[in-house]
Image (tube, rainbow, N blue to C red):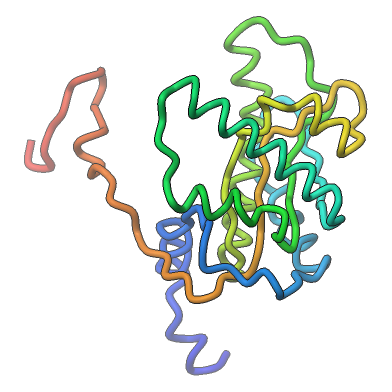
Length: 213
């Protein structure tokens, strides 16, 4: 073990990655390719995520320029529809992502295979809760390699069109898209969030306490 390695605190490193895994929509290197093996290594890590009912996750890496352009067009249409329906204002960072989505070195899709016809809320939570942790682990693995990603499920509003573009089999869904590129001058920091004691209760909802109690 080198002296430098001896000084590294694994807990601090893990906490840093977890605390600074932001959606990165700007300060990205659109010219630098991401090797297939790097993405496959990240997916290997992602599939170690906890799973409940099944390991139904599947991944599609999109590099083809025509497909990326078609996906970007679907994304813009879905975003415009959402903005109109909810009266939202699009953030500058979101506009930046939308404008250059087709230029991303890769678009990573986290899909679910053999999605059952789920009517009960408990069944939906159990099934999707066995797939989505892999998407989060994938984003963390990318972050650790200085690859920026943005978590977006917006394209589920156009899942039929996306499934056709990706040639997904019947019964599969594209749950999450991660546009990815190496970061370029991005400064990823902890976000402003409410502290744990303002969002945590003990024994029952609404019950708070201090360490001294």
